[in-house]
Structures are given as structure tokens and as C-alpha cells.
Length: 630
Ligand SMILES: Nc1ncnc2c1ncn2[C@@H]1O[C@H](COP(=O)(O)OP(=O)(O)OP(=O)(O)O)[C@@H](O)[C@H]1O
Image 1 (cartoon, helix red, strand yellow):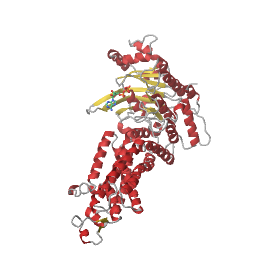
Image 2 (image 1 turned 135 degrees about the vertical axis):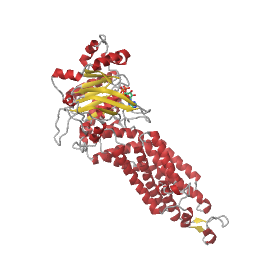
Image 3 (image 1 turned 60 degrees about the horizontal axis):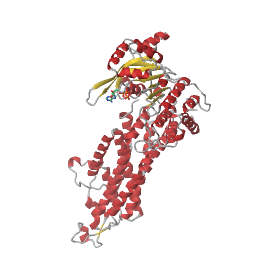
Image 4 (image 1 turned 90 degrees about the horizontal axis):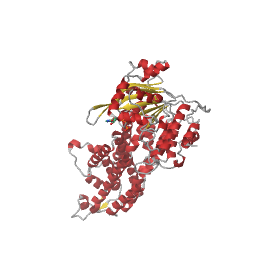
């Protein structure tokens, strides 16, 4: 039995759970109607470009609507608008069961986008388990959720690759077709009431594509689920599964109506399709041909399919009644997206734990990869060679201070740049998940802040353990543990800067450039390279995390360490060496000579402030400014 046949046979897939007693319900899907959708984008040259022109249509429960059209016709743009995730500006009307959809209705839309996005290092099982844990109601036990995962895996034919990593740019994993099915599986776990599929056959061979649509057709009719799909070149077999066809030609409607009427319609307008020729191919050829396009658009302008259909059924839809008054614009849409809706499928704790687990697994693969561990060890080894067993003497004071500064800046640069490298893919996935209302932002942020900390600490602490003894830093347990504590503090606070910048700049090149500028300023203001900052920017010293990191280590090493042996009296830079009979320089003298070193308490309190400040700023930025499209 093919996986599609099994899918058809699975009655459980969309069952709702009601407390202890699980009732099998036939899922009644939504009736989606849209009218006069006009959309435009602003090009790089700052010109407004209209990409959709008065596009109208509908999809009833249990029907499959296929949106066809040549590349660039506007199919994906329309799908983005219907799913509520469009970034372009648009006007028009969209109704679900006769009402403007709110956030909780939109959460029941599932949208399988063209690009499959996953955390590369997670296996398919981990990915689906995460989705089930977070998207299926808390009233289901984890065992039931896992059972559902198994069912979906089986019906979608993914059993053989369940323990394969998802893969992506940096590692190989699932094939394209498997990833597409994995995307569908993730969405099915959300018990959708409307399915939107953008090019679901990409990466599938013709047999698998046919199977997929056979299943979708059956699925749609048994669950009364409306499915809207874009598709490039369906075979005639797949074409026969569609109930309605929408043909887009340069953003305009070339045809919208019943699939069985499409061939007679084309014949009627003078664009006949040869017998035994795939109607889908014919439609696309006409939509590309300059002369045929004109005929198509003119013919369609003089016809209103919705009205024709209504005339056939004798019904007047609410959409038609309200079309002249209910025109949705960007402002209304934004207001609507701010509506308070507390109906999350799962509670904060479930979301926090699941997100923390996923984040940990995903970051572990990246932060503790062999290449990173080798790099960490090599840096520690090279630094240890350069600063090998520095004697506690005045002659080597500059070298010892240089080693302290190196450790302070290396810890921070490492924490920041390692954090930002994962953002480009991570941000896209998270925006997509937030758009579909998968979890609370607060649960995500808390999970991100906490789950990654141990991973971020392993390398700097490991490096420090090696370098501390080889470099001959103050040989006392108290000092050593203070160094470890300060390194942990510096790492966590630097990670906060990276998280904030990552939420601020979504484009990776901009993120990289701005991080470099922030870190350079941070370093220059830190009091090592420039001792006397110009008056106008002296305040930067108080913002420099590098300065606090360096200052803390400096005080612990000198002030709370053994004194240094003086240089010969004709070479010493310390007056105390000329008068002091012990021939040593105390930590206080060194701190005083260095100048511009903040007290230890401030070097601890300020990074703690950074930890909180940048994490709060990152949350507020994602909450109110860099919001995903709803
Ligand atoms: N942000 C944007 N800036 C400029 N042009 C855009 C933008 N988004 C979409 N477009 C343009 O809008 C038109 C429709 O794009 P869309 O991706 O919807 O087409 P499509 O039919 O889905 O194409 P394909 O089948 O190749 O995916 C194209 O001409 C595209 O270049």
C-alpha cells in the first residue's frame, strides 16, 4: 500500500482531542473567499510595482483549487497574502466562513512554503517530535503526541529516513522530496482547517507527485478540508484531481472556475486545446504567448466567474454582499494582528521546554563541531606558547597585562561571532513559526537565553583552564575560580549583544558588518589601546563591555595576586622599587599605574546589567518592531 493510500486510510490524523475522552470528529474545513486583491511591491529603485490586479476566487471545504501560471505570474505572492504572511502592500477582501479572519482562525491555516526550512542538525524524528509537542494540545499526553508523529511518518512514507538529519547548506541530510514531505508532515500535525501548498511537487518524481495529489484529494474530501496549491506543470493525472483552476497571467486572472469547464472555455474564446493534450500545458503555453495572453485577459475581464457560479447555485454569498464596503487595507490588517488572542495550543512550560531542547540540540551541533573544538584548542595552544610561563616580574608586566587583555577580548569576540553565525537560518525558521502562531515569543526567548548558555561556556572555560596554568597566571585556587566566574559573566553578557544585534539586522551581511563595528568600538573604548579617550567620547568607556571584562581580570590578577618582583633600580618604572626594601610591587601600585581601571564591583555589576539589558531589548525588538507577518 502506498503511503498515500495509507494516508487516506488514517482516520486519526485530524482527530480532535477532548479531555480524557477522545472523540473522532469529521473536520469541517474553512470556506475561504478573496476578492479584488491588488498587491504591489517597492523595487530597489524605489519604484512601486503592481504584482496582482483584482484577483478574486474562493475555495470551499473539501475542494482543491490549483493556481497555475508561468514563473513570475504572482502565484507565491497570492499565496502569501492568503496565508496572511505577505510582506508586500495589498488591498482587497479576504473572508473565512464569511468573516474577516482573526489570529486564532489564521492559526488553523497551514502553509507549506516553497522553501523548506529546518534546523539542519536535528533529525526528522526530533523535528516532528518538537512540532507535535508544541502544536498538539496540552490535553494530549506526550505518548499520544508521539503516536501521532509515528502515524504521520508512516502515511507520508518517511519511516526510512526518520533518524536522518534534516541537513542543509552545511551538512547533507534528507533529499528534496523527503524534506517537502517533512514540511507537509509538520503542518498536518497542526490539525489545519485550510491547507496552502506552494509548489508541493518540487523535488518529487512524477510517481511521487501523483501519489501526493491522490492522497491530498482523498484527504481533502474525507476531512472536508480546502486545499489551495500552486503548481508549475501538473501532469494530466494530477490536473484531474483539481476541482477549480485559477490561471494567473502577469498578476491578472486569466481564468478562474471549474476544472471541467476550462477546456470548453478556452475553445469558446478561440484558444482551443488539442484532444489528448494535457490541458495544464495548454493553459501555461497560452499564458506565456503574447497574443494569446491578450485574448485571455480581455475575455476574462468580461466575465465574473463568481457571479456565474452563484447564479448556478442561486446563492448570494456574504462576500458579494459586502464587497463594496469591506475593503481591507494595511492599517486594518495591522490592527487586526494586534488583537489579543491567548489561545495557544500549549502552555508556556511545554513551549519553553520543547524550544529549549530543540535549541540545545541544534546549537550543540554547531558550537561543539569538530572544527570549532579544534580551533578553540589551537588558539589556546598558540596563546600559551606566546605567553609561556610568564615570570611575575616587572620586566614581564606588559606581557602579563597583554595576556589578560587577549583573554578578555578573545572571550568576547568568540561569544559574539559564534552566536551570530546561526542567525540567518534560525531567524527565517522562527519567523515562519511565529507567523503560524506556534508559540509565545517569551517562551522562545527564555529558551534561547537559557539553553545555549552551557554550550557557550564550554569552550572559553576549557581554553582558560589550559592557558591559565601554562601562562603562569596567579597560581591560587581563589584567583583561578574568580577568573572562571568573570569569564562566564563576560561570555553570557557578550552573547546578549549578539542576540540583540541578531534581532535587529535580519540580513546577514549587515549583521556581520554592524557586529564588527560594535565590537571594534567596544574594544577601542576598553582602555587598552587608547588610554586617554577624547573628552567628547569619554562616556564610551562606561559602555565598553571589553573594558569591564579586562578590568575585572586585571584586578583579580594583580590586586588579589602576589606582588611582582621589581626590575633593577635603574630600569624600574615604579618609585616604590627604589624605596621599598622588599623589592616588590603590590597589586594596588600596578592598578594605580595602569589607571582607568574600574573597581571590581563595577566590573561585575555592569556585565550583569548588560546580560539583562540586551536580552530585554532583543525581546522588545522582536515583540514590537521586527514582528513576523501575521
Ligand atoms: N519584494 C519584491 N520586490 C520586487 N519584485 C517582487 C518582489 N516580490 C515579488 N516580486 C515580483 O512579483 C512577481 C510575482 O512574483 P511571485 O514570486 O509571486 O511569482 P510566481 O508566480 O510565484 O513565480 P514562480 O513560479 O517562479 O515562483 C515577479 O515578477 C517578482 O519578480
